[in-house]
Amino acid sequence: MKYTGADPVMIDIDTNTWQMDLGLLEEFLQTHTEIREGFSFHKKLNRRISAIVPVHVLGNMCDMDQFIRIAQKYRLTIVEDSTEALGSKLRGKHAGTFGLFGTSSFNGNKIISTGGGGMILTNDEKLAAKAKHLTTQAKADPNEYYHDETGYNYRLVNILAAMGVAQMEQLDAFIKRKKVVAQMYKNELSFIEGFKTQEVIEGVEPNHWLFTAKVPEKEGLIAHLKSKGVEARSFWVPMNRLPMMTKDLYFTHNDISQDVYQACVSLPCSTSIKDDEVNQVIQFVKDFYSGL
Ligand SMILES: *Cc1c(COP(=O)(O)O)cnc(C)c1O
Image (spheres, protein in one colour):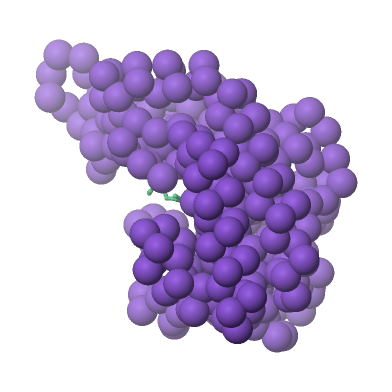
């Protein structure tokens, strides 16, 4: 987004779903923007707001019905960041297929991986061709080295693409396994006071990409698991707290993202994890809380 010269307006998340708070989104649009000549503008900054980016966090999905309604009302294009929700569906429809574009990363930590790179989804052939052009150096002639605009060298090379295709065939099995692991953690750890996972909206079948929960004494738990040779991770630092974003707008009432960031931990849930390894992690977590 920043590469294109655009600046983000960050909207805080919902306490229960940890997805963008759509009440806040609408409040922001209502109070700070107006529609002129068919486009949405930020009134004070006099800058156009072109698109909204629903990020389907942790493999769950945003409420796309609401997103679409809001996007239409305020004349915004939807570009979904569906990276974490590859294979997740809302009423049978895949994440990444609701907006004009969807995007997926195949980085090493994603549900399927090509080591790096990703894909863009769209139903619009013209835009697909344009995206292909821009990601392959904007070369306008198959023989001559003539570039008709500033492009990017963002191609997914053939060998990696082949790896991705092979993994794509296993996606259903990966999701099935992820679901079992998530259920094991949930069944065994939900008794912990203050333990809370993300709320899934009705109609969504999540891919359970990453098992993340709000827990008490997060730092202590991570240190305890580390001492047992288990890697548990903190949640991502909220974007509004990153140095290159601190000057951008962040719309919030209660800074829920900071609250969720501070309390959340991700537990091991790779598709290759064995049942007894999951049970071992569960035991370590239980040991930690019984020792408090
Ligand atoms: C991983 C991730 C990205 C970044 O993808 P890269 O290919 O690593 O640049 C973007 N958005 C979300 C939601 C992600 O999980």
